[in-house]
Length: 243
Image (cartoon, rainbow, N blue to C red):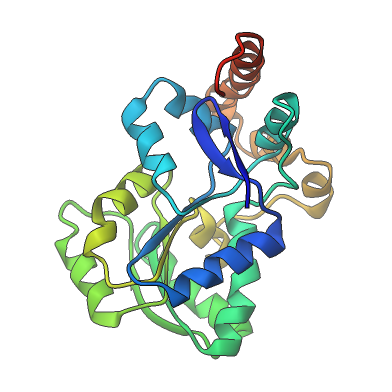
């Protein structure tokens, strides 16, 4: 598995099959392993934040979440195979969890979202042992850590949004009795049905960002990071830096 760095953030060059294989290999190792899915916005945020950049680079797997990251890899002449978004990777893992009857812990979202996500996932994958749920609103995470350790899950879906979820995983990784800690943003809301994924048309054309903007115009401020990201990548290439 090769990798490249985009604005200093490591992105592993895996397709879905490679990502799933890599994640499942973590089940056979000691200690918790972290999986992050940086998109353009996250990478651009880390560009001038060395602490956050180090957190991202500390993971055992970073996949390219977003067509902007894929395009950036092509600009840097070190292309990744495809976009591997966090939600999609989680969806590829659920059938395996079901087949192997693995334990999954859901952490994040507003009150009730993780529980609703559990109910919806179990409708399709009844043999997954969803052993615990916790919402993402907390001031002291001692209870959450104790709850996870009590259940000893194979997977923890940490859905707090970036950079909170990556920082939380990095901070608590050594304290958690779990195998795989995945930071996958708003995925629980999609699993629960409280948020909708873009229609297949938008996903296939790699313009899911446009659907999100149409549905929520207030995201325009966040979207401004995308052209800034592209310009920064081009500048890093021209400057012959280790991007």
